Length: 192
Image 1 (cartoon, rainbow, N blue to C red):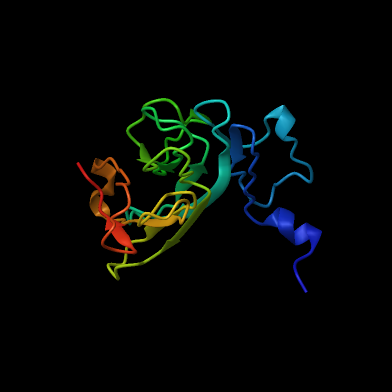
Image 2 (cartoon, rainbow, N blue to C red):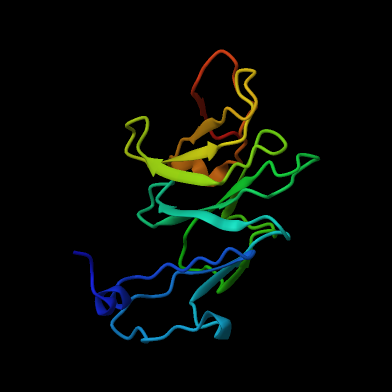
């Protein structure tokens, strides 16, 4: 059955462009315009990818990782390069607050921006992101697909990384270790 065109515009809208810029989070209040022209920068918040060919925004979810009651952003950029690892991929975690600037460069250092870096060249972390309460602690956790990771000696077998949320995730940086050859699924805890 679906929802009508008019109902869609009354909801909170979430716009994603796959061109190293993510215009997002347009307020879905009752005064929402019938046409929102992103070329005219009519969105309320815009996030830019860090570099060319990062493909920022292929996967985007909202989740409350730190349990503060606000939706945090998890943004995938599967083309991201880091420390000699071409296309290892990255998932940016932007913690929400009342003071988010209207334009955010994901390549800039910010205390409210966490980075999860892919394990190896061409692993492409950030193509798929999901959420759930994996360990039953009442905090949302990130589930990140790493589709091209070589795991257990199998080329491009893929890997799933679980990043556990919690009240202390504000104070952590994240990493995804190379695949653990003894386990099919690894839980990766935040590190200091």
